Length: 130
Image (cartoon, rainbow, N blue to C red):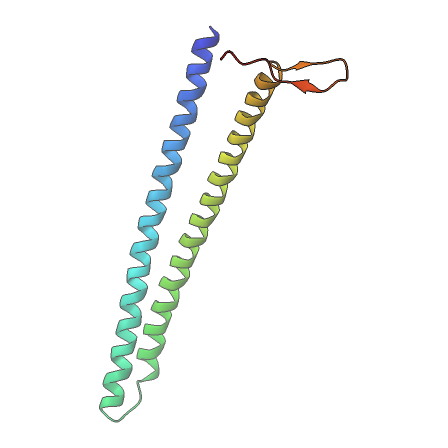
């Protein structure tokens, strides 16, 4: 039964990793789309200012307010997605470190069981078969 338990654990872990990658991909896509919207809003604002200056006037305050609010909204949303991505990356790296530590600990315990101690208490590696 231990084999099936181990298999189930590994499948669950693989499923969680795959779900995490899928979730990260969705966030990355949303961040990209939102950043594109922010870029389009910045472009529209720049064109509006350019046209107004080219016509010898200033951009009217309603147009400026509307375009700058749209830009600020999209920029804030893109920043939120990017922050969420950074958080997910750190979580993934943290869990990878924990997994590596667990794996190292089990390797260390199996390695230490194959060493022998002499009378002075110092560990010696078993003789190698050459």
